[in-house]
Amino acid sequence: MSFVRRFGFALLAPVIAVLIAMLATSVVISLSGSDSTVGDFWSIILAKPQDRIMVNIVNQTSMIYLSAVAAAIGFRMGLFNIGVEGQYLLASYTAATFAGAALLPGAVNVLATLVIAMAVGAVWSGIAGILRTTRGVSEVISTIMLNSIAAILVGYLLDKYGLHGGNQVRTKALPESSQLSGWLPFERPDGPIWTLGLLAVLVGVGFWVLLNKTRFGFDLRATGLSQTAAVASGIKVNRMVLISMLLSGAVAGLIWMPAYFGAAHTYGTTFQAGLGFTGIAVALLGRNQPVGMIFGAVLFAFLTAQSNSLTLQTDISPSIVQITQGVAVLAVVIAYELVRRYRIRLEQRTVAAARTAPAQEVTA
Image (cartoon, rainbow, N blue to C red; front, side):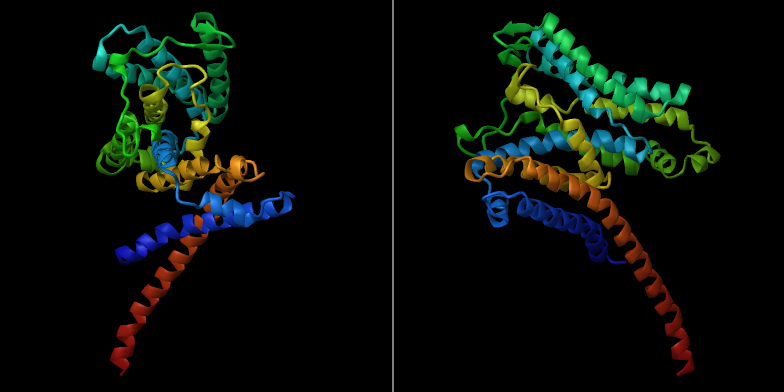
């Protein structure tokens, strides 16, 4: 099969899923009784983004992509790490507390903070990995519980040791010597693209290399396809499970770091929750492939950023975009299966045609 055809098949399922999601969203808007029409909604969502929204899309894409990679590492192993949310929550608080203490100068403080964020995320996900390998506890159950524990733990620590001001509480501010503002592609009021958005590029490349160019990546994919076959071929599944959970948690710990060093500079009301669950959806949409998840992350960031204009120009809630995102994730699972079956049938026809062609020539 030619490269063009393979590329077309790879895009077909996501395109079908997005079209179904758009149709479902249009139906919901029509039935909602809103004064605004379906045309108003899509004209706003599909309009060319303003400069500041373009910057916001790029920044959000970097964090969503990191979250998607964290989830995808588990998925490729056959693990459902639903605890990405709790892992990056605890890692973000710990990293912000360390960075705000300014124990190290400038860039050294940045590097040390990133290491701490990865370590905390890995340790927190490692608990689920240990429970899975030693006690057989489902990682789905354990990571859901760890999400709740992380939220309670961070809330307690922030309230006890944070800086209180009015109704708000936060960690100490990041010193100016460690702040990384980023690049200004447009005017200064439009905001910068965060420097640590590059982490998403590095992690994406590293994930591709890990999967396709290393023995560990081969074992990861083999175990994800069939643990029985993996055991028969000598792969130590329990060790793979634990390492995969540690890697997934380490990447999860980086999710909020671009925003922290680029704009937030403190953990408190500036923290953006929910990216862990968004990453799981994007990983599914991108089929856990490094390139596929880029398109998924851009799509989710684009829809979220564009939906903010709905409040000003229509009476449609921005939350309607979540229907689009949710239906797209559900539809893509079915679309991938339909495309796979169609592709197999097409290949079978091609092989059958190739076998009959020489026989016809001999007969002639």
